[in-house]
Length: 432
Image (cartoon, rainbow, N blue to C red):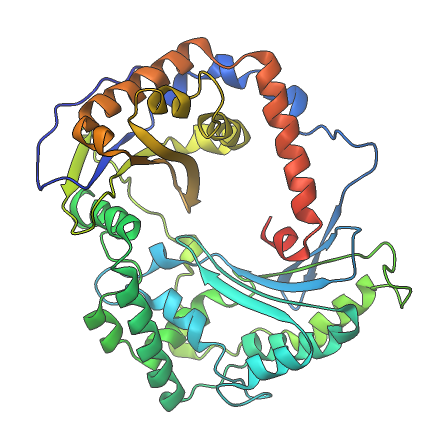
């Protein structure tokens, strides 16, 4: 299978350009992918860098990550429901709104500021984010604060305080944040793809942090619907990362038994009312393809910002292929993101067409997609069709010739080392 440059149709004056097609060039990369099995799971160090244990506690999947470094512990909660799971008409932005509201008090620790005040008092770092495919929360602290941290976070997830006044106040904050996002060209460009290029009626056809009208109409009951469908054992998981092997400061060793005991004591499934028991969790949704088989599509947008020229290419990756080769795809992206001689970046920069580039892939339920961001120079923007031609020509050459064995080994070993270094930070360890 091969990719050819499509016929383009101008929609608006250009600042950003997005191409949308199936990820066909990836299918013929077998000469690139073949050697991966030899190196992908190897370890360039002699010692084991980390260890993961899986437990089920109160119905929740619990993962204990022993990173064997330092004296910081992270309690994290992963919910596989993100912004792309929101209903595009009724609830766009709901997952992000709930990520904010859930911090506004629980039955055991009531009050909008209590969670953050107590986190600060115990010297903890805390944050949360909502991505397209998940919502992630963490609390990171010294092991001495383990019990206090588990009580605070566990109560937040087990029995949130449903206060209308706190909800309305936080909703205004989120509306302001969503409005600010509209000034970010990259977000506008990605949202415009979903709003203009997806097949009619596709559930991703939305501004995924919510329009002002959508957020204004959101009710507390809408957040309860999300909570009772996704913040439950069959969906939510708890990850604890820290040094379970040795005490870094001479104090009592962090105990896996204590961690599991505190989770058992303080993290409980919510009591789901009968009216909510038939809801579908975000992770259970099956999405239609983001490509309708009609071939490549594109949109161009105008911007009032000067000297900002963004190009975004989106591809859908066949699910079976992606699930079997995601490590290979990640390695290929590392190659596409490299800046050395012969790289895509080097090829375009040498002609004065490119400022920077970034290749990534993501998975939301059954949809895997690859996306390639490029910031173009003014010359590159003027010659954007030529840039796209050269990208496809480069990918075709990569598909045919692959990557040298030597460079492939370097990329894989660098990835392993990078993951090991990330694991030293318990917050990053819980994300991995």
